[in-house]
Length: 293
Figure 1 (tube, rainbow, N blue to C red):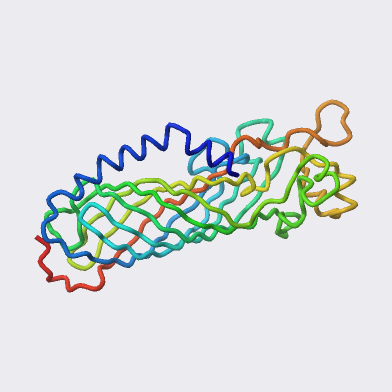
Figure 2: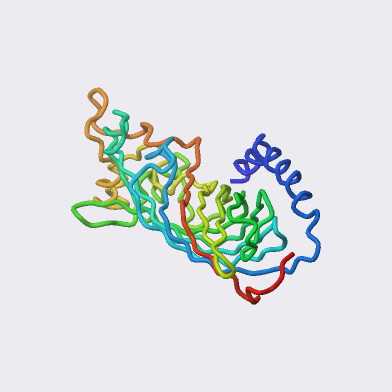
C-alpha cells in the first residue's frame, strides 16, 4: 500500500492539483472585506458507480443504484469552504454487460454497498454565498480525504453471498499462502476529487450538482484482482460455494480442466468509485437578512 501511495504522490497529477489550488487560494482570499463565516446543511441524492476489472474504462458504467448522503458545510470565505459528509451507495457490474468477448466469457459479477465518511475542501471559481442575489450560479472544485467500508457480494441461484470470507482468489488457503495471495481490508482511505455547480435559490437555500470520483488503494471492491485459485484447494478449505463463485467462465482455453493460475483480473490497477449527486442546502446559524457586503 505504501508503494502505491508513493507512486501516487510522485505522479504528475499531484503537483498540477497543488499548483491549481495555490493559484485559486490567493484570489479567493483577496478582497473579502468583512465576511462572516456561515454554515449550511445539505441532503444529497444521486447514483454511484465504480471503475475496476468489471468496468475498466467507462465512467458511469455498471448497473445503477440510488445513493444518498448528507453534509455540513462551513464557508470560510466566498471562495473557500470546508465540508464534512456521509455517503451511502451501492456499485454493481456484470461481465455479461460488457462489449468485450473475453469479459463476457469470464462471466463474473458483483455488487458492493459502500459507506463513506469524509472531509472536503471546496474552492469556488467566483465569489458565492447563499443569500447574495448578485451571484446565481457558481462552479467549484473539491478534494479531500475519506474513509469507507465495503463488502463485495455475488449472486448464486437468486441469493447474494458475501465474498471476502470465501477467499475466491485463494485468500486464507494453503494455495494462497504459497502464491502470496493475501486477504483484503474491508475499510480503507480514499481521495475524492471532482467538480460541481452551486445555484443560489434565495436567502435560505441553494441547489448543488456534483460529480466526484474516489481514488482508492484497494483492488478488491469488485473481489477481482489476480489469478484463479486451485478449485480443489478451494473446495477442501473454503467449500463448494467458494468454488462456484470463484470461476464462472463460460469456456476455458484449449483442453484445460480448470483456470488455475490464469489471469482473473488486473492486479496493476486499483479500483475507484464515484458519486453523481444533486443536493439541496439550507443556511443555518444566521438570519437571512444578514448583510454580506
